[in-house]
Image (tube, rainbow, N blue to C red; front, side, top):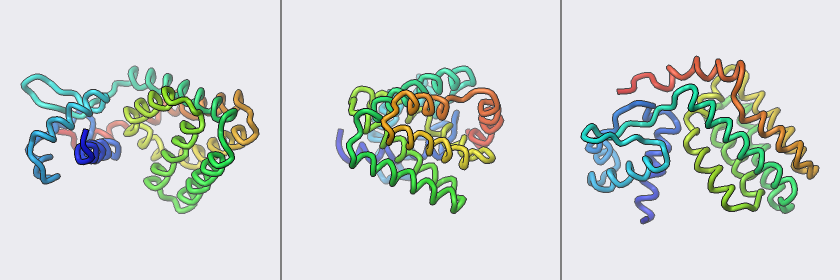
Length: 220
């Protein structure tokens, strides 16, 4: 895969993550080719890559659309995500180097700055860096790859969650507990807190479901 094709994939993936391309929206190859100044061939190849990641659905003779996740599928995927992140946290508490601990602290402080500035979009990206620091700290490459793959599938929905009232402050406070547990080397505590942090149930599920129309609005 060339650097250009990777960049193209990441750009379209980002458009899906931030809701610029919405769940269920038709992906017009000609429009995308014009937008990115390329032919339709690399666009088609990129959509196939995104399909293999679960972000796009390619329908025979009807073209590609942005993948939609139903309520049950969302719950199941967040359930698995919570277990993957929980395992990352448990291993990170045992294996993180002092340098990696400092990187985690820096990511945590960056989230605090975004929270204080009341910038949910900035917080979203810094939140990704925070979670990535925990994945890296697990020192288990297979686990890291699997966790990242599912994270990508859920990015639009995790981003949407942060827009729910008071979720930013709650998310940061939950991060704080995770950081303290990891720095203390308490793997069981870090695992428990991360599982609870990622899992959607009860009120959080209701809030996410209520927000989904916002994510899907204007979809073609």
